Image (tube, rainbow, N blue to C red):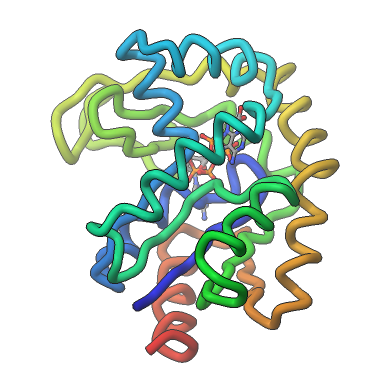
Length: 216
Ligand code: AP5
């Protein structure tokens, strides 16, 4: 069983690498942000609640987020392990995950370490597939055809929360609420720092080596 958590500031490249890691490990991956967005586009009650928080760059309240993710984590389809992208992000989420899985049951927490000045450029230039959520970047990862997803042919769009003023608040909330979670995992010896400032391909290569070395 392999359980991996991806952590890092907004725009650090978690979503770009999550499905690659999951396919290497042959497990499922989930992104809390993608789940909220698909609820939003489906017009569910959860989506409507999440909307106001996401659009201002705030975190969705713990009770809602924890309930949603724990249902997925504890589902028998994920008995062989998983990749979590964007959860946990608060101390309460981390402690709840530990208590549900059993202490020290996470194999690796990968911290995508990127200088904050690079994040703004990544986020404001990002395009996302409406259908499969694959991220692109107009300079760093352009699609073959303008505004069309290479993987599924879906339309690409820009997220409301990738506007500069919202990005600045997301980075602030990340520093306040999520940096303490990194400290928490560093004390378990599961935390692996990844220099995610480099190109997508170089980061991918490092991830593959890291997983081979540390996770059986
Ligand atoms: P979420 O969607 O998870 O947003 P995020 O963490 O802010 O992360 P991003 O999706 O912005 O970035 P990423 O690291 O995945 O980067 P990506 O690979 O796309 O969450 C959205 C909202 O949902 C939150 O603000 C909150 O409201 C709510 N939420 C989510 N989880 C929650 C939780 N646990 N608790 C409470 N609320 C929660 O890459 C970014 C761009 O850079 C792309 O354009 C990509 O092509 C490009 N890129 C990627 N890697 C590289 C590279 N190495 N070099 C150059 N460009 C690159």
